[in-house]
Length: 83
Image: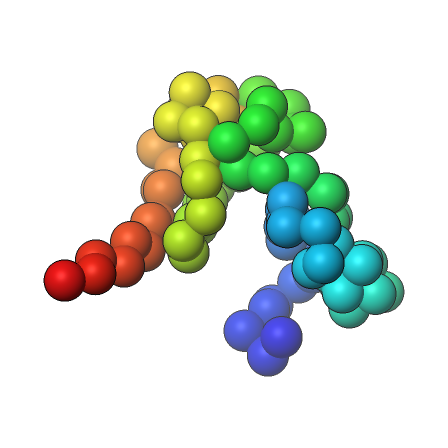
């Protein structure tokens, strides 16, 4: 993960069962705060926790995004559109 400046300020979730072990094996040793959780669930983070939240293609609960995102924070979402 060459984009990381400081892993202690990075968190990740993954809800797809086959990927959870992979994330644990790869992310936890880097110091990343990884939690097994689906994006549509209640997120296991405190209120006003994140400056930036990204969502590549998974589910998300907008109320949880609002709850965990700091005031003035940014939510980036990538949604693929199939034609």
